[in-house]
Image 1 (tube, rainbow, N blue to C red):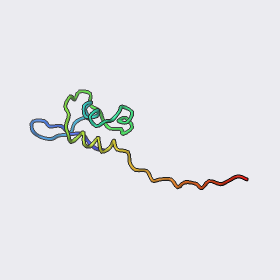
Image 2 (tube, helix red, strand yellow):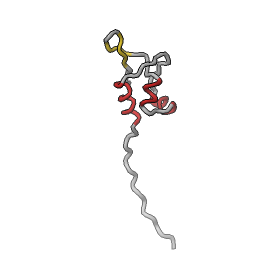
Image 3 (cartoon, rainbow, N blue to C red):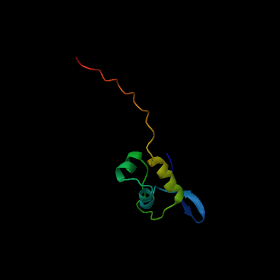
Image 4 (cartoon, helix red, strand yellow):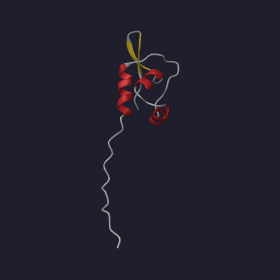
Amino acid sequence: MHQAYVMHRELRRKSRGFSCQEITDAGLTCPQFNALKLPWDSRRKTKYAENVTYLKSLAKPEAKPAKPKKAKTEKK
C-alpha cells in the first residue's frame, strides 16, 4: 500500500492519508477512491504533486486482454 506524504519543517514525512484536493485533482470519484482502499485524511487541506501523480497512476484502468469472439453459426 502506498503512503501519502507531506512536508513538515522542510522534511518529508508520512501523512495519515490523502487530502480531498489530491483526490479530486487526480480525477477520482468517491466510489473509485473507496474501491482502492486508501486512507483519507479529512484534516489535511494541502495538495502535493507527488501524491496526485500517484493517485492518477492508480486511476488509469489496466488493459484487459481481449476475449476471442465466437464464430456465428447459421441455423437451418
